[in-house]
Length: 389
Image (cartoon, rainbow, N blue to C red):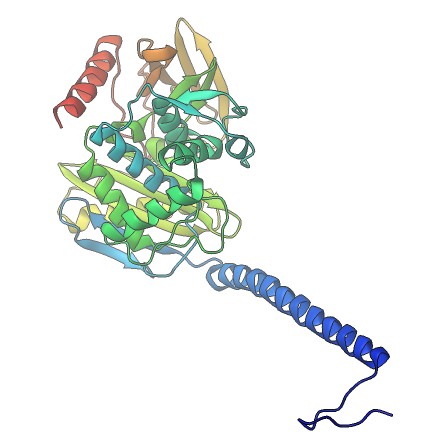
């Protein structure tokens, strides 16, 4: 029979002690399992609630790029998932490193296993391969390549993407993006990676004003990578008069996001649309708010023509040029004139309308004629500008 000790505690037999310890272990295990399940369910619930909370609800803002004046806004401070708009900060830090001279455009960026296994959209680079800093920049602004973004983030972050993400958040705070947190370089889903339309407009303004020598990358129509022509995903370059950058973004949780800058009559605006339910809604919402912004700035309105046909005939190579044909309404094609081969075989291209007696009707891009000589001059000027800063 068990009896009471000096402290008044009941002493257990060896068998009872073993059972007691086993029961405590079971209770402790159940607590941990319950806690972990609660955390997991809470994370899932947070993601679902965030998506459900803002489903079909747009956040938008338009700013004057020079003054920062807000010209229109709709729920601009809702914290939302940035998706690939994250890459704007990856590019900001890349341009900053180029300005500081810590990296160069032709420097080789190694591709890790982690970077190569990123989900699409991606270039499809393999572990152990390399691409140049300039190729990575172009992959981000055109294809929004997650593998290139990750590789660039690891390169700038001392081999660690989380370390680079910490630098991204630090830079965001320095720019006044107080409601933004970054967790990766690409924008692939992470429940803690959040921003707002206002913060992204602030980032867009700084990209334009802080790095005028690099802003031209955002208007790249396409670039050649390992024999493939990589086109730009940004529809506003073809769908709004004066638009010359910046970036699209999409995940299921985030919806369809867009940051656009447009220039008319020496007035430059930066617009943000987040959470659109379709590409068409996103494009039209951006066009509408930019129109209102230019009107508020006293810029004469531009006729709103047809949106470029959504179905595009695959690109055709002819006489050293790439021809992109609109698939409807018998509009004239777009000619994409290739610039001379750049460093390491890289090509730059720009879109120009082909007259042929027809009028190419766009909501459309401010298209710039590009010849071999003018493209070469533009590239030379950009490099010269960087060397002076």
